[in-house]
Amino acid sequence: MTIQAGEANAGTTASGTSSPDPDPDTAATQLSATRGGEKQGLAERIALGLFILVPFAALLAAVPVAWGWGLGWTDLAIAVGMYFLTCHGITIGYHRYFTHGAFKTSRPMHLALAVVGSLAVEGPLVRWVADHRKHHRFSDKDGDPHSPWRYGESLPALMKGLWWAHMGWMFDEEQTPQLKYAPDLVRDPAIRRISRLFWLWTLISLLIPPLVGGLVTLSWTGALSAFFWGSLVRVALLHHVTWSINSICHAVGRRPFRSRDRSGNVWWLAVLSCGESWHNLHHADPTAARHGVLRGQIDSSARLIRWFELAGWVRDVRWPDAQRIAARRAA
Ligand SMILES: [Zn+2]
Ligand SMILES: [Zn+2]
Image (tube, rainbow, N blue to C red; front, side):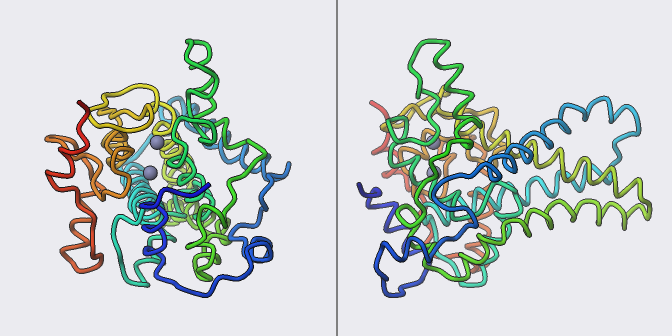
């Protein structure tokens, strides 16, 4: 099976590398961009469970805790700042650039996007990209790692499927083969290193808020409350917003464009998802740098890419023009 031509090409051009291909079998064992292999072990599953459950428990505890010792402006500013920094790291870096090659950029920016995306604590870059390319390859058919329609169309089946698409799929023993779906990234030594250092980016991401909070307030309680809001609650919220693209945006929403799947545009997630919830257009035109193409559709990621383009930081941006958009309209 092959990746859709557009995506595979886009991915290759994005990496900017052209090292000679080693034998695929030996390469698969030598070139692993994550510490785990092609099978998910028990320890990996436990670690994953902790990273999902602990921030989520923090989210549930957030309200009573706020009443207990307050939520200050400093905490809010740090949490919002870290949220949108890392959200755009995922949407512009991991997704639009590394997965789909929506634009080209310089080597330093290439590496910076890999690091900022990693700060979102959504897994090593290469694993994320491989899973997501596989999702586009099979979207809502057999082989899609996270379709809410996996168990059927009845309401109980959809409820079960939504849970699967939201987070259950991550516990699947089968892992997407990285060399098959992300060969361009696996063969880039620096990207492989960044991807393997995922634990370090996680640590940095969790430590920035208490460090800033502690320095601003010059107190340990300031550091602690910044850690609570800016690290735990922020990570939990971004996790659930990202996962909602896989679950909610494949179950409901408007479908003004033709796509091979059940992807929908969900307006109320647009701001929090940094423009990714215009998911129907995304599946209709995966390499486009803008997902919110219709009037009034907020897409902060596209806005930032445009600013980067004006600043000369990115080039060859695949902006969807009017003709391209019209050609993808549903009948
Ligand atoms: Zn999708
Ligand atoms: Zn995509």
